[in-house]
Image (cartoon, rainbow, N blue to C red; front, side):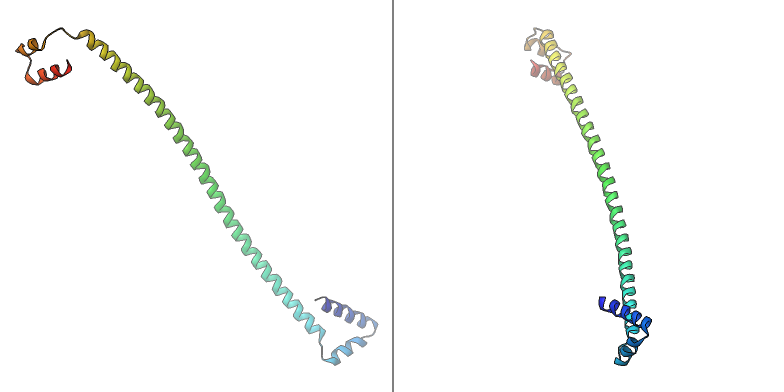
Length: 144
């Protein structure tokens, strides 16, 4: 390519001097003007191809950037949902502990009340009561 540029400058300088060099080149069968035009056309085509590829790459980059932004939004949303679920889980654990504590207190209170309110009745006396049916008798006997 540098040779073509040098050749072009030589041709221009020869034209300024009187055109002797041009006649010699054209007599040799070399047509530097056609070569130069062909070289320019090739360079223009190459430049257009580079521009086309550059535009395709820009579109591809934009598409990838949109996908990245979409994934980042999803990641942010999922992290927020995970945090909310963790907070809900912790809250439910605390309530469960609270309810287990209340249950144990009630269970303990019932045991105390049952031990205080147990009548000193023998099993024979329970069985003799006419108003107590058989299923109730079994339950009472099992609790004693």
